[in-house]
Amino acid sequence: MIDHAAPPIKTTPQAEVFAHSDPLPKRLYGLMAEFTEHDQLLHAARKTFAEGYRDIDAFSPFPIDGLPEAIGHEHSNIPFVTLIGGMIGGLGGYFMQWIAMARLYPLNVGGRPYNSWPNYIPITFELTILLASLTAFLAVFVFNKLPQLHHPVFNVPEFSRASIDRFFLLIEAEDPEFDITRTHAFLTTLGARKISEVET
Amino acid sequence: MNEHTHNRVSRFQMISLVIGLIAVVASVFGAFTNTKQFFFSYLFGFLFWLGLSMGCFAVSMLHQLTGGRWGWPSRRFLEAGFMVLPLMLILFIPIFFGLHYLYPWARPEEVSTEKVLFARRAYENGLWYIVRQVAFLLVLIGLATRIRVWSVRQDATTDALPTRRARFISGPGLVIYALLGTFASIDWIMSLESHWYSTMFGVIVLIGQILTAFCFSVIMVSVFKDEPSIRATLTKTQYHQLGNLLLAFVLFWTYISFGEFLIIYSGDLPHELEWYLHRIAGDWKVVLITVAAFHFFIPFFLLLFRALKKHATPLTTLAVVLFIMRIVHTYWLVMPAFHRDGLQVSWMDFTAPLGIGGLWFAFFLSRLKSAPLVPRNDPGLQFAFVYAES
Image 1 (cartoon, each protein chain N blue to C red):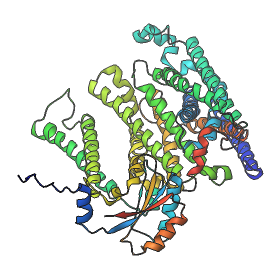
Image 2: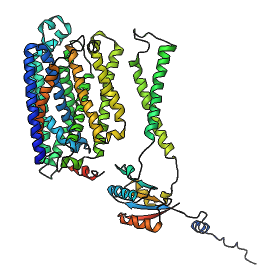
Image 3: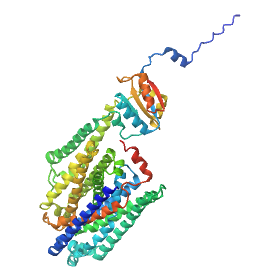
Image 4: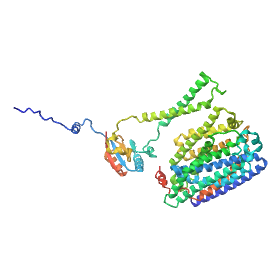
């Protein structure tokens, strides 16, 4: 009898499949320098900006005073949008009370004038705060294009420490000043602990 | 403090002492022509400057507890400010002789006819008033002196023990300040009216004191901004933080002041309205509108702008305006109890605060000269210089 044993199934490890298929060509997104101290990052950000780089970003576990200005964030639209939201809230809040209490359904409360403004202040105040803070909250999402589930910087393994104890400075490849060797050399002079290539 | 600044401070100390003495003598002359007006003007001037000292005391304890970069350039001004408290205890003494001009409970004929005052006579009487005020100020002076001693002692040693001690009493100190200050403000101002009471009143007075102290910090820091030690700890960040604190306390002051008014307006009860009726009578309404505009609306909207808070000149200008408004607000709290039908400005309303203020400043500057302008060796200080370049 001929042994009709089934031929052994050829298996390929998953990793090998992906290694060989390589569906998306890797592109360089930028260079990222890692720092251990927050003032190093602040210093590096200022130096980088002074060098002429504009498409830069900085990452830190906590807010660093002066860092937004250092990477060229001069103006934010959020305060203005928030002001508009607050004004709509305040005027709207007062208007709702005035139209109800003084025009549509006038009530005599203890002989006070129909438009007894001191009593309308709490609601006006609360609605000002409510709409201003909601507007600010939504504006942050809209202006930052959130929610965004992935970003090229996540491809750098060390970046997970950006929310713990490490400080990162990113120079994007799109920057007209960007040149892989020159930029790399420049970042080395800033005292970075490590410089990684960020791929998309 | 270098030689040059030291001489300038000494000269200014001399000038304020002379101005203070002249104004005090003028006020004393007024005491013989219109005694009642003198005592009211004196109480108003005294309470404003005492309030500044108390505010400095509270804010410097606050900084001992929480730290913060705004406090390093301003700490020594606050300390010198509260070290004027012993002088304020001495300046309190004239008021003890004029209680029956000021307070309805000190006039026996009113106490015998007024039921409420009669019921309160065990607490509100001349002797107890004096005992309470002296005890209150002695407690404050005791705490303040300890904090100052430890703060200065830290300058000489790198061991953090003095700072730890100052911090240890600052917590209870703030509680004592709030509790006793509330009691004291009932005695000083609330009892000027025979029936009126409000549980919010003490808070309004104390928050006003703290706001005054913050305005004073901003002004003093900008006056001394070219002094090398101050310059080393003073950047846009410090102005920004002080500006934020001004905004917070302007809002807090408005919140509680309006809250008190709204509750009384809603209740509409005669014995509660007394206070506000005296304070909107005649031209007092103009004073009230001025306070609403320059103590709230204008500072509030201007302090929303980051650009203003980060620059010395506009922020200092605003602090000066707020400081003046603190004087006007104190005036509006005290004086309508005397001029119930409307605003009546007397020349003593200027000389009394000017005289007390002159003496206050002379004493303040002498305290300021006795220690370096920026504390040394405080463990928190290392963070003050890290950011100083920004």
